[in-house]
Image (cartoon, rainbow, N blue to C red; front, side):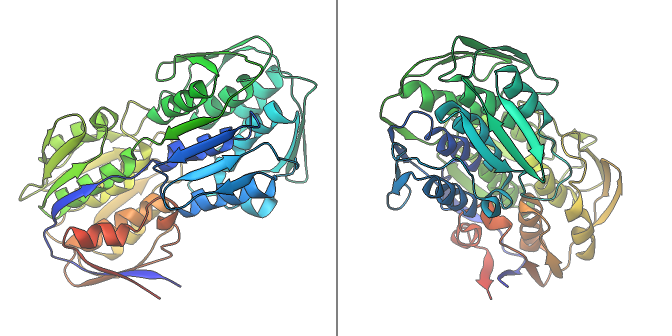
Amino acid sequence: MEKYIINGGNRLTGEISILGAKNAVLPILAATVIGGNKSIISNIPNLRDVEIMKEILIALGCSVDGTGSTMVIDSKPLNQIIVPEELVREMRSSIIFMGAMLARTGEVIISYPGGCEIGPRPIDLHLKALRNMGAEIEESHGHLYCKTEGLKGADIQLDYPSVGATENIILAGVTAEGTTIIRNAAREPEIIDLQNYLNKSGARISGAGTSVITIEGVKNLRDVTHSIISDRIVAGTIMTAAAITGGDIIINNVIVDHVIGIIAKMKEAGVMIYSNGTSMKVTGPRRINPIEMLQTLPYPGFPTDMQAQMMALLSIANGTSIISETVFENRFKHAEELTRMGANIKTFGRVAVINGVKELTGAKTTAKDLRGGAALTLAGLVARGTTEVYNIHHIERGYEDLHLMLQKLGADIIKSN
């Protein structure tokens, strides 16, 4: 089993560029099946989740080629309606093939999705919306059997601004008859990227990034070339690496507007940040300030995907911090592992109280999920002695060679069997 071995204590310095966003590329890869057209997509990170999406596309009959960070997908030969169960169970985002496949073939069979165990993430909003658009969905033996005689535009009010549900409705609405309106839509930047990709191929979507998105159905889509936006969570993780080690890092190819919520809390913790729109300089303080209350919220609030990394940072703050996790109910699994390293963290349901300690010490730790694994790696950078992080396959779902990025900045970290 692969692991990271980290010798803490090095101050990180240097310059780094951020690659494409995992949460942007996955729905765009699903979207490639809709029009039976060719898509050339660049700035794709080399991640396990991307590999799974590629395997799903191939299993559905699509042609997938490309080298490095570019993928060429021709969905014209698509000839299957069953999304392989073993792939769906590995990655939650695969559920967005529902909307895309209903738009393309009018039929899809897909199992309930898997992914990180960070609490229940029900797909009832997806199912309700697709049924409103004319899909018949039967749930049986862990599978969803979805069929439609033709999707029709609908006015959909989401009970919660779910990213996945918003994406599934957009994908279903692209070629639906009439106009689809999503109210209380998720506003994440990755949804804007999905809109931009689809509109380049001939879709008529407006409003992404706001709470009301309008999709006017079109009959055909054309070939398209698109570059994925940079990953705001990877940027936030590197910002935290600078902060926790008292380092000095220049981060390039970052869309600063996408990390405003992270910047605000970092500054509250005493981190110095200078930015110009596409790059930023992040300098960690001698001692981290505690944060009175950090609450995770849907975008543009503080992202749940940065909560674990901030907990690692606040574990060495000069005082007591409180984190309230409002998005997922089982997302404090890293707290127990950080405690093994000497952190003083108490969790009460969805609230964590972190009493900062003077130092963390190296320990053998286990990544329970993607972002929790990143948090343990960050803690290892500043801990006295050697830290081992096991189950790094979780980390590799969302970070391309995190250890190499950190090595480049001066960290003493290796990947080992």
